[in-house]
Figure 1 (cartoon, rainbow, N blue to C red):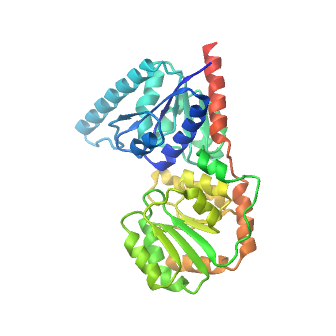
Figure 2 (cartoon, rainbow, N blue to C red):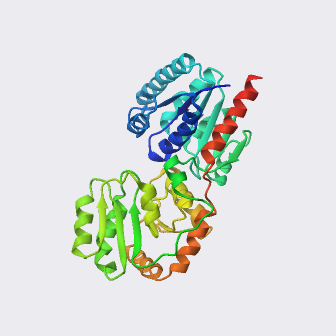
Figure 3 (tube, rainbow, N blue to C red):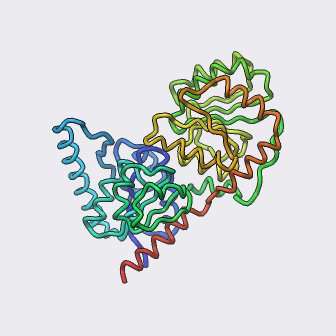
Length: 364
């Protein structure tokens, strides 16, 4: 039984990448698939670039606080629900998978209106608002972190499967293997998500003179704004480094690195676990419901990472941690093994396989 699929959601890479991972599994099956997202999110570029069809709606995250703003927001959402509903009917969709983000709401509501099974994929340790709202109507909720169940409706079935990762990541790493023991110079991978992280960039600029004596080599994805300043700081401190605005081949960078300094988005945490890469995690302090702290704690609890306070990020603390760990290869190896213990490389296939069963049971 060939199915017609809708995958909805987006906004950030943490939502779009799991959606694309699911899309890759569906594509292998040769079945019909339509993504529904926003004109304003990363999906507007990443989904077509990956070769998938996208219905991009004018979804917006913020609804006005005034009465007129709320009315306008509600009318806008209703218009988008109608557009999503037409797409579901035109495509004879069998199921809608929501990966969360504000862009998922129109298609999730359209699934309810057309009585299509709604499946949720929640990548974060603390679920986002859209998935919390729609959870009570879902046939199944697949979790990236087990503790996310505590924030969702207890009336719906949940399953912890991990976060769907794309083929380039899962093929690059053998989850049952191990990383070679770190040697000097220590390879340090620094990144802050697709847009970089200004706070991390500023801190590395500040501490560059203090870590110049360490045997380290740095690969740093800065984003656009801080590219030149970071590059100049490392050059002035005579630190061997490669500084880029954006890196497309992250699997290779994970393989190269001995230690990461990064934000703690759900996708980043899942990729670090798959790669078995130890990390100093700096949760984004303004993330909704402080979910990046919860994501980071999933790794720090098992000894795979250290969580640094980002309110503010203390340069002296980071200096001392880098000094300490650069001479402890066995500690890095232990952190790596702990990270791998959390890896779930088959999450995307498990979600698709079980969704097929749900749809087939619904059709009986």
